[in-house]
Image (cartoon, rainbow, N blue to C red):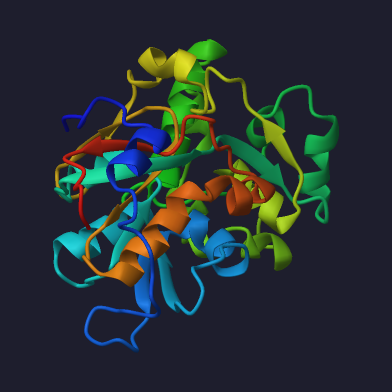
Length: 298
């Protein structure tokens, strides 16, 4: 997608759209009393429903799924939200094709463990994060790579780890279909004692208060300096779309041209530091940045 202009910053975008994002109340898709609807990545659900402050007198409705699934729901016209916020900007190119989006936050892949189970406690004294996984007995959880970016990023991280630790079979040794759970339910398996460890976003571990092991920056998909290495990994989604490894970013687009939707979108991306950093996300000083043909009026 072309940048308009390249890498628009928060200040440049606000200057171009000054005065256009004021809300006068709750203005929805079909009537002045309807809520602004958001279809979002599962990893954003908690922050948006417990920490995000929408503009005064504006109601929002948040629906969360794995980002790949959410993107397909919009592409297949199963959902028609005012705002879409996903955990991978690449999904706005395919399966979606949107004219513009804003990138507003970052994350990292970590290995969370359950200190309430005997196998989970093994991670507290392990020499490496993967040693207990290879020893057997640990019940590992992850998400479906066909449905959300966390799932395919877990595979990317393990592919990178195989090279980093010179263990070519690492991914094959660790992964099985029985490990897969929906993103919004993955860490609930800790509460039930069903799994001992899980590959999750750092924000998910922070929100649920579970300990986690950081992976090296060369593996955890958090560091732009390793972007070229991350890009050597890829995964093909069921619809044939090929996604490649890249630093984890969250992006959003506004689909409805109403004052309420504009006000909510601006609050979503412009105040990300206020409601996301306490949930374990990272928001860089230059964010949000805008890509594509950003409208001067919305």
